[in-house]
Length: 290
Image (cartoon, rainbow, N blue to C red):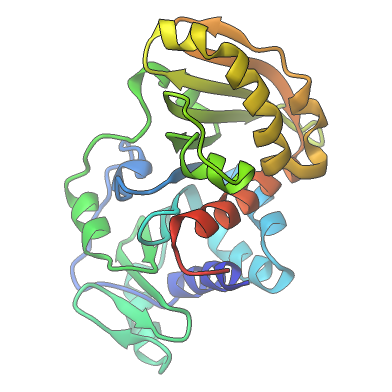
């Protein structure tokens, strides 16, 4: 699948890309703030979680390449389903050696903001010692955002859950995501769907919370039956055979949200969500095929 090749390309770019002037990214900033606002889904992974889940979401050759990169990574932020796939890695990277390495690789051509690999359809740059950027589109917006980050796409209303080690935020989930799963969008006024999870312990999976954030408390109350019914389809679409634990979740109203907590999901189930989001949103969003 082409999406897997793009991931592998981003991995290769880490050891072979650089910019002239070092940029030190503020570690207190949510890396999701660097991603374009047009992304249809946002994913943020703690380094340890990324080291567990991403190899399961990739074919063996890409996973092997990724292991060296992830060993130096503290946070991963991904934007999918918009005009371009975007990846931001925060960690400790060989900034000076990167440019020299890339200059010796004929597959990467120097551009104003970084390097471009035509075979992979990927642009990449290491603008500083703690930041790696990659995109199937241009890098200008990512670099500009790294210099002057805007707000995180995550609503402040969900800031507590947003601090977890795995966060997946899907704005307007009943538009393109619903169309990808059900065949048509649904007329449900949800601002977004959040999946937030934290590791329970070795071999014990993840404690997950699912939230549908609505426009107001009245919408949450009125559309509660539709949200519960829709969750069955969304869980099947995202989790596949791993959906049973999520299907039994007990949802409750909390002001303008409808949420379920205490859901135990395996690492494999969450890796399946990452793969499904990428595949489903590409089909519905017009991004280049897998």
